[in-house]
Length: 248
Image (cartoon, rainbow, N blue to C red; front, side, top):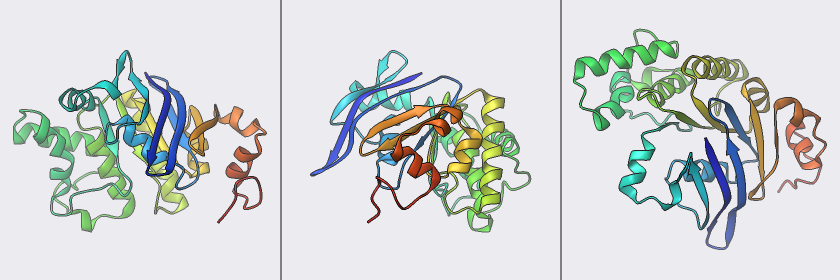
């Protein structure tokens, strides 16, 4: 569904993406792993058009997103949902207003119909009777669920997740993994996640790709990656300080 070809991006003298090549399959969960600072968030921002590459292409089906003018990209962007790190909720809005925000911005739906859709999406992510709560009243896990409800409120074809388990304990992380699997299976959406949470990755991924020093160095299914003997991949998956990846 998405094909990334030779994507390059530098900030000043620092090369962040140095020829990324990756294919995202329709209706599957692709997880991009790698250390903090390796460019995972930069890559996902290119896919959704928040950043433009120095070189390379990103094809959404037959359309090269990197060539689109901003107005046309805004149309393409409606095919995407995004769950930002920390959920990125508006603190001054209720849960219902947060989840309904994309519908108010991009559709002509009236308030009553928006609330119906909002309630349906909140129920989909396991939240009930929270519409009039404020983000400050929610736990970290509930905030993530509200963020996911907002990400899927317009029934996007593709949902991007930026570190969805950051700040959560292992039990809550596992709960979010179940939520990702349940919503993806029910909605048959294409999911792209970036994370360095390995147990979470093993539980949800159809395909794993490792980003290291600006390139995808290995990719495959969970079983293929577990069997892969690349020493860089092995060090990262096993969480060892000793190895070819230097710790500074």
